[in-house]
Amino acid sequence: MRSPIYPLSVSEYLEAELKSEIRHEYVGGEVFAMAGASRKHNLIAGNIYSRLRSHLRGSGCEAFMSDMKVKLKSEIKKKSIFYYPDVVVSCELSTQDQFILNSPCLIIEVLSPSTEDSLQN
Image (tube, rainbow, N blue to C red; front, side, top):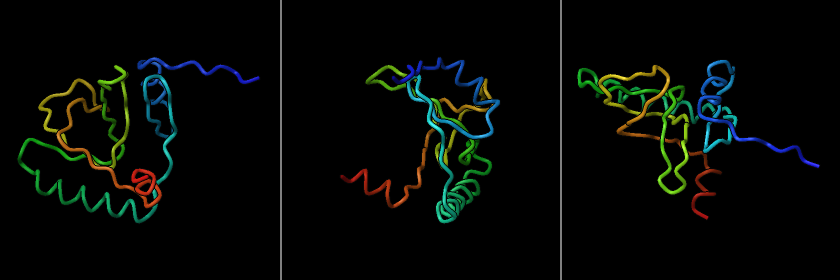
């Protein structure tokens, strides 16, 4: 018999994430551990971040790497989603939370060949 898995509330997830040594994404109560990225993946994301950071200097917008959470709201299922994009740009002038972006203007995900293949099928 399987043990039931109870969904976490947003506040439970955020509290646990502050204490966790690994990152987790959150989709409507379900929590998923993040896998590590390859060397090539890191180089690509780092190069994109570096270019964006230089380009945005003095603009009021900021580029962030994969440790910044983005909060989204699923319009279809009305569920909160928190995830860590590879690179994200935000022009939020002030934010109440130092760990979450609510209104990014650009999100970049670097796909592995296997992820890209699964999206095309």
